[in-house]
Amino acid sequence: MNKIYLLCTLIVGAGLQTVPADLTAPVSTNKCKTCVNNTYNPGRLKPVDSKTALKPGMKAPDFTLPAVKGGKVSLSQFRGKKNVVISFVPAAWTPVCSAQWPGYDLVKDLLDRNDAVMIGISVDNIPTQFAWITEMGGISFNVLSDFFPHGKVASAYGVLRGDGMAERALFVIDKMGIIRYVDVHNINERPPLEDLAAALKELSGR
Amino acid sequence: MFQSVKILGWLALGLCALALGGCVTSEPGGLAPGQLSAPEREMDRQYLGLAQAAGPITISDIQAEWLIIEVFDMYCHRCHLAAEEINQIYNRIQEKGCQNEVKMIGLGVGDTLMEANTFKTKFKVPFPALPDRSGKVASQFGAARPPGIIVLKKEAGKFKVVLNQNWDEGRAAFKGVLKACSPLS
Image 1 (cartoon, rainbow over the protein chains, first blue to last red):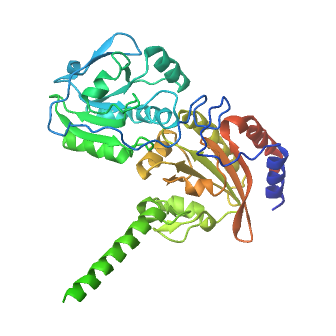
Image 2: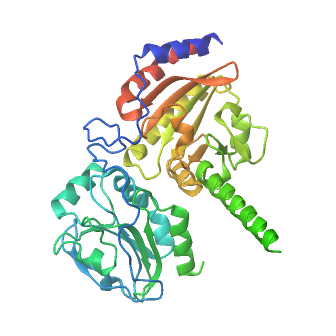
Image 3: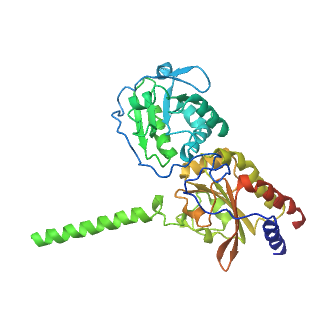
């Protein structure tokens, strides 16, 4: 009992301060009150502000966009080789987006098992994406810039919002370029990993 | 006949309202606010001193004098960075023989079961890591954004907050605590 009391004393004696429970305030700060430093919290937004006409079974619109890693990436380059998961996120330097792609990096084995690659797309320009990704410790999959013409690919997929941001959306596209799964998600929330895993499992028939 | 249909209609409306109300107030998976699903693994339930094999639990059900909570999110890069260091706290507790009095859990704020399990597996978290989908379990202790550390002490059957610290801001101080733990044995 004494040693536990001592532990308590030591913890309190370490001079630590309790952090206020302010999880929702729109805060832009260089102190880490958010998961990732320097994020801007836009507050709660209209859950979905677009209407995609794309549905499972339809051909996915092809695109070619510049990648943060350099060069350009086209959807068609994966034709016959890999299934593709496209993750549209609304904007760099925002809290939910900053806590989405690092998780997809963590489940690369899930993608590998289903012969799939992840492609991240936002409407930010390359320098912004580069700085943001660096802040997130690096992202291993391709991140593409749909900056100019602004949101052209997001628009082709029907996920460009009225304010110029993309929706938080996932498209799973098979090796033949056919859309197999669409989730235009509530922009304020993250799509559950279970749903993506189930879509990939169905795709690979396992 | 018309009256009966009308009554049935109102009854149906009432039931719908009740159901919708339930959706608003309950947690994902049918949990009440502040509840967690019991750990799936028997060894995790034993570690936490939980009697039930399944069903909802609350933090108060955990049998410990002290509870250290790692507040994480599978998607959060800084949580990935913090995971190994926080695992060391658990190892330190075992080394110093405090494991019966001091228990640890992880709370995956905003995470689903699969996401919390992924975090546990990827970072070899040695203690139970439970999803807190709505974040309400962590927030009842005033949790900071993940990665965070909450230290609770049980008094009269209820846990009181002793420490609530964002890991990035409190890392150095907490490491000091671990060093200071040496004389405990």
